[in-house]
Image 1: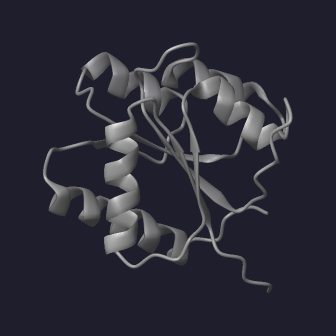
Image 2: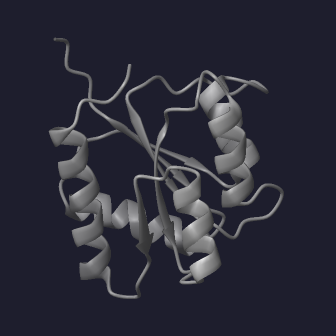
Length: 142
């Protein structure tokens, strides 16, 4: 079986959060490629190779914020679950929203996990390490 490193697609509109996630990936010594989309529309363009974006090839894991402009996390999840080419994308919600409605709606769209962002950099590094271990333990679609 050919091994290709899992790519991480961060979908988040908050530049500080993106910087923290990238820093946590670096501190966790992960060599995985990292891509960033500022909202659901840009993420879809990257996953589909639309609007001049280079298509991100599988395997990949998406970390998804819920509250974003243009297309929020729930709208993004609805769109990919209805797309026959993207319906099996592995998505972990990584957000500050601890709303029970957001959590329930995300799991109804088959997310792999719902992770709350915290201010602690150590906590974020632990969560990124968990995602990396997940990507090494499971076989992801290509």
